[in-house]
Length: 313
Image 1 (tube, rainbow, N blue to C red):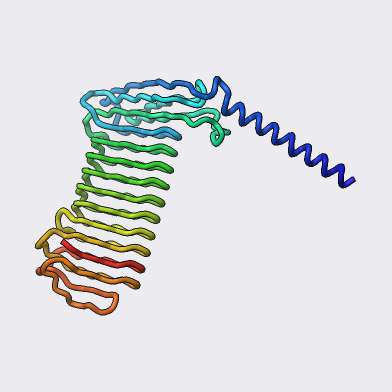
Image 2 (cartoon, one colour; image 1 turned 180 degrees about the vertical axis):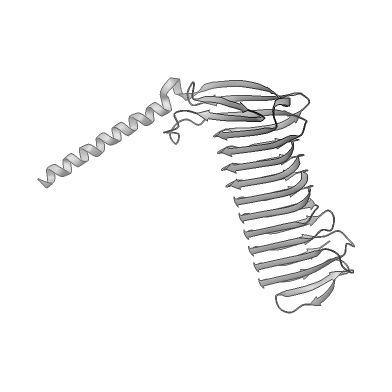
């Protein structure tokens, strides 16, 4: 009796595997091998749009400014199957939504990958809000002007260049490369990935990486930056206040030659080195360092639990 149950169970498992295999085969090889060309475009008058929202899954996004008076959206590439991918749009009042929608995603892990790029051209005019959200896709954003500019990515890098506005960039498993951006404030956070910002100026900074390096090069404005696991480097284009901390990682700060500042540095496990010209130490007790250059100036508050600390010109 037990042998009969065992044989029956084995037959059910085999039947299940055959059924599953056939479904996977159809997902991969249906419609001539799974390579369908995608070309779709839409156009909208900029005068009718104050908010732009872009969402994609498994598609790269390029959004950039151009000399024109319409928002031009074009989806190109190859999809797993014909009719699988569409460029969905909705416009209500001043809000325009662009979304890459993909059908038959049940067996996406086994189907041939899509190769899609959504390109959005935006006139060089101020838009109230621009929001870009991607899953499994790269973002390349350039020349944008918005009161509020938000970028969110899960499993994909974000590159943002030469843009203006209150800016928020969030990545989960992706790098951030931000260059030549400015505005009221910048909030950049990463769960797993490095954050690099260069040549940028904000009235307020908030930069945080859980697992990854943070590198701020030639930046201006009061900086708040921290990492949980990763080194933190900051090079100031002009002398502004800094509040920086790491749990496990080194901190290196470069300040302009001759700039006045006051520093308070603390490390639980690590060394502290002050190479800024004219620095006068006030307290050099173990794991703690205070002092400054000149009279007054912005405050530098640096703290690391496990890591070294250095200030130089």
